[in-house]
Image (cartoon, rainbow, N blue to C red; front, side, top):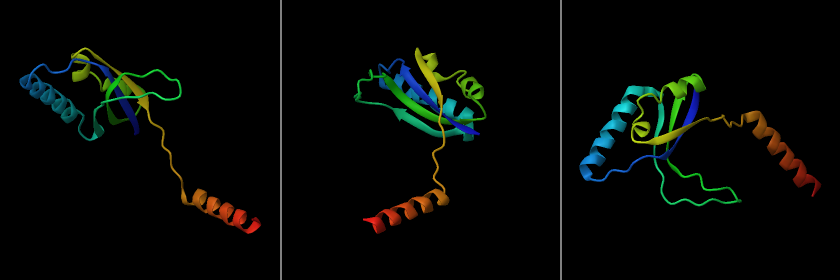
Length: 118
C-alpha cells in the first residue's frame, strides 16, 4: 500500500451552523466508509503565502489516504463530500523518505573524517 495526498480546492463553505453540522456528518460518513485507509483525515487550510515565485495554489484542505495504486486512490473519491459541494481534488502519491542505519553510519564516518582533517 502507498500513501496518497488529497489536496482540496474550492468547494462551498457552510452558511449556517446547521449546514456546518451536516457537512461534518457527510465528511465523517465518508471517512468511516474508507476505514483504515484513512492515514490522516487532514484539515482545512487557512492563511497562505507563496515563496520563490510560484503562484498560490488555492488549496483549501488536505487528507492522506492509503491505497494500492493511483487508480484506487482516485476511485476512493467516489461520493466524496468535497466533490459533491462543488470542490475539486488533486490526488498525489507521496514517496517515502527513509534514512536507514547504514546511511546514518556513513554520514557519521564522513563527519569524523572531516573533523580529523581540520
